Amino acid sequence: MKHYFILVVWCVYLVCAGSSGWVPTPTPDMDQLEAEYRAEEYVLSEYHNLTGKTDKEADRLMLQGLMLSQSGRYAESKEYFSKVTTLTPDNPDAWYYLGMSEYRLNQSENAIKAFHKSLEINPDFAYGYYGLSLVYAQQGDIWKQSDALSRALEIEEKAGVESHNQGAPVQTTPAIPLCTATAIIGILCAGIWFENHKR
Image 1 (cartoon, rainbow, N blue to C red):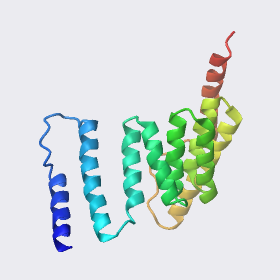
Image 2 (tube, rainbow, N blue to C red; image 1 turned 45 degrees about the vertical axis):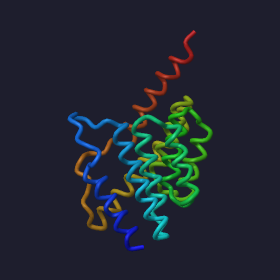
Image 3 (cartoon, rainbow, N blue to C red; image 1 turned 30 degrees about the vertical axis):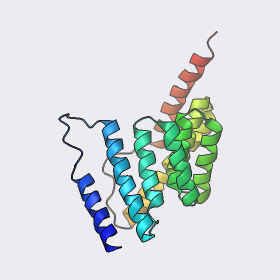
């Protein structure tokens, strides 16, 4: 067992040390990053198989899903976030990211279900309302979209007041007033509506 552990640690060291070679580009190549991540994921999964420690499985799947989502591969990221929701069904972040993948794939009903699930778990989860506002804007439902965005802003404002009362640092950048945000969203949605209903 000790030898397996040393082998796993050595492999992790090689992956972290960049044993795959130096790439002389100023921006990282997403395919190379994914290959390195998969190699590291394999080493970590072997370690978890040998030691029996699987509590990090959801975290690894979440990171993989986020990486795929960042590279625009939403169908694949959806699979990973779905696995995370199976492993940790009470994680509102996992449901939010699943909803965002569904939203990016234009699967509005599934996205709405995922966002509602995140809000069922945590009613004060502002990102759930933010996700709903995106879907409603995509559908052209200005009223529902405005209501969801208003709730998200109220929760964020309430969280800022609570953190201020607890002695936490206060946000120094001014927040957009709720009426201004609602007016901007209304104007944008009206423009979208008129574009879609031209004769």
